[in-house]
Amino acid sequence: MNYDYLIIGSGLYGATFAYLAHRQGKRCLVIDKRPHLGGNVYCEYQEGINVHKYGAHIFHTSNREVWDFVNNIVEFNRYTNSPIANYKGQLYNLPFNMNTFHQMWGVTTPEEAKAIIDNQRKEALISMQTAGVTEPRNLEEQAQLLIGHDIYERLIKGYTEKQWGRKCTDLPAFIIRRLPVRFVFDNNYFNDRYQGIPIGGYNKLINGLLEGIETRTNTDFFADRPHWEAVAEKIVFTGQLDEFFDYRFGKLDFRTVSFEQQIIDKPNYQGNAVVNYTDASVPYTRIIEHKHFEMFGQEVYNHPKTIISKEYSTEWQPGMEPYYPINDERNNKLAEQYRQLAASTPNVIFGGRLAEYKYYDMAPIIETVLSRHQIF
Image 1 (cartoon, rainbow, N blue to C red):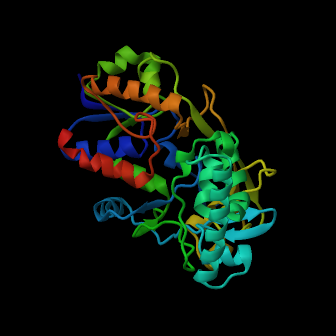
Image 2: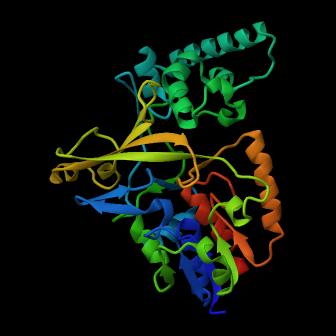
């Protein structure tokens, strides 16, 4: 065997694992079936702009160890995620805060906003009680109990139904157990202490993590599995959990995302990195304007062109990129069967969004690998 670890997948889990193992003197080989490294955080450089090829990625964490770790690889900028919602041409700030409530109802004080929300929540509760229901049966009932009718109808319903491809009345309540509601004028989407984008793009982070480590792209583990299983003492697998076990119990379901990209001959298209389109009649869920992740103030206008991506959420089919696990009863039960099988598989470490069938933000991925450093 030539390597201590064969790492399948060069996204954040695989790259961070390889970095830590390499520093411990372990011989690592990283392979990826895509033509590039970096998994879904990969950026494509066009027109002087780092385009988030697989959707917007904003790094955020309250874990100082994680923040120091990534900034030791590449310095991060001061980008603050403050998305906008567009509902039939009307604009609202996200997450739900006093700016949103002023735009929705014209209120100017927390007391006024709270009174409207409390009244609408009571109406939702009475409606359920009239129907003889004691607990919310679906996402729609849960959302209206949390935030009321107006915000649900304008800012949640259409967006959620596009995102999941299902009516809110057909989605389980637990998907939306909590909603961020702030009675202050604060458009910062995240509560975390630290957030930003790598200066120069995420490729710099991945390249820094994989510096000095052998990598191969356009290399599919499953195309020659016996060969790859023989090259290392241990495998780190970050691909689809069910595929590793040849779909023994059946296939797990995902939602996937497609992108319609445009280069536009103007320096500033929408004035914000992220604008969600919450009206169900608009086919895409949001528009990303990539330059706003790394350019601020006059710098935006120093680049005469901009690039946008319209994001469409669709049902996953084999051959598509899997994005979001489907957290319904069937898939949760099936995933647990695979997880138990994975736990009893010797010399294979399963990690990341696909291999654990679990939605992960970027920082928790790195935090998970750092917490497992004793495995080397």
